[in-house]
Length: 240
Image 1 (cartoon, one colour):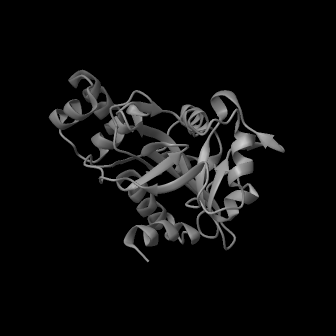
Image 2 (image 1 turned 90 degrees about the horizontal axis):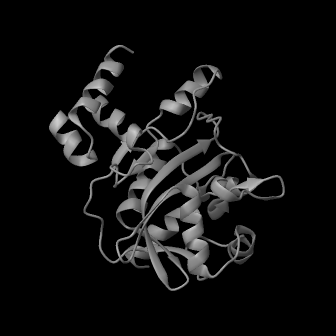
């Protein structure tokens, strides 16, 4: 089996812990590609979700399709699929009593265009596949490995990514009043991006770079934010 084939078949196995999930995110952002119709999209941002023994993440949907490894999971509501700005697509890695997957949050098109946000990523993939909605595409991929031939499949990009991935907290998860577990889920560094300067999620990127000890110069150069903004975030983190 080729090296690329072995990398894809890793998705046939459930992940054992968050560290293995982060390793898969890194592969997705540095080597993976989604082929939709006759177009190639390269993931540039994804988030880790895992709920299972020893890792109880309350933000995971725990749909049965997330309990299988290596499947495309379109976010559900009841017996149907979420629509509008609530659409989302995971590459599942559950199994052995665990649920979860990699949520696709950003894609780069072959012409360099950027798609940012889970629902817009789904829209772009549906359009490339010539599908009207999630239900139509789901019928074509349900029960099949993510790398299987079809209108949507996981593959390998021709050139490895040159941008270094940044690890941050996930986007848009409110801490609320759900106690320590909810606060942990909101703060966990489970988002990975090679385009941290994009507006969606830039606040999380800024906080992560400050917490990691990056200099003001590094942060302003990579994120395109003003030094004053960096200073305010530093002060906020220092004060707790």
